[in-house]
Every structure is written in structure tokens, then in C-alpha cells.
Amino acid sequence: MDLTPDELAGVVDLFGSLTRAELRSARDELAFKRGVEADPDDFEATVDDAIASYHLVAVPDHHADADEPLLVVGPVAFPALPEGAADLPHIMDVPPRDLSREAVVEAVKSRFRDDAVVAVKVGNDDRIRTLLDVSYDIEAWEDVDMDGLRDRLDDV
Picture 1: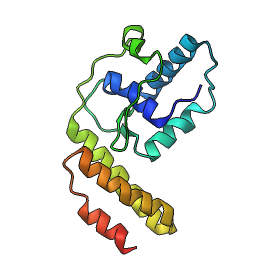
Picture 2: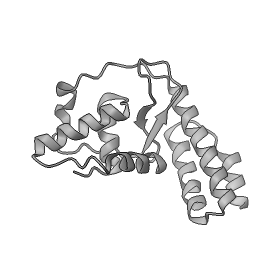
Picture 3: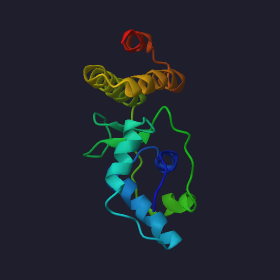
């Protein structure tokens, strides 16, 4: 069962934040409800792609009860609930978490800076163009000034 990046964001949005393991469990529950197989091999790549595209943000430094990064809805996502997802909060035992917005914003900015450096170093023009678009999404998503980083990418 494949979920789009926006559907992954929709599932995460139901809970506010999820670990990868919790998101995998949610995907498995959805597959079970639909009577289909959940491909165990493509899950990690699907989540990695959603993080790379800024549909999800991995927040490593947070003050919540999880020992691993928490996934939250990212700046380019248009969260969509997959069929049957509305029941997930009743099925899954996910603790409530108080994740600071500052930690989320810092995770996005840090990820963006790292992605920009890599894209410039390897001369990946497509990724640079994508990151320029993402910079506007970040500003619309949260009150973050991306002008300095965007100017550096524009110069390339």
C-alpha cells in the first residue's frame, strides 16, 4: 500500500507528531483495514522522500517523550487523510506530545541550509530550483525570513 507524501502528512497531522515506528504502524493499520499488503521494503524510502520534499519534517531536538526524531507536517504539505485514517487515533496508542514550534522551525531551517549547501556543492540545478520554491513555502508556513538563503541560491 502506497501513501502519497500528502497522505503521510495527513496521518501525522491527526496526531500532531509521530515517530517513524508509529507512522509505520499507522500505515500497517490502514493496509489491514483495506485488506491489502503493506510493502515493508518501501516504507523507509517513502518517508525519506516525504522528508526530502519537505512534506514531512524530522525534528531531532525536541522536548517530548520520544527517543527518536518526531515527524511533523512540513511546509509544502497539503495534508490529506487516506481512506480509513480518521479511526487511527482510536486504534493507536500514541502519547500526547508538547512539541515546541521553535524546535520544528529550527529543524526546517537547519535541513534547508544543509540541503542548499549540498545542492550548491554538487551543482544540482534542479534541486536548487526546488529549494528556491520551498523557501517561499517555508515563509508562508511560518514567519521565517528566507531571503538570505534564497539570495545565495539565486546567485548560483
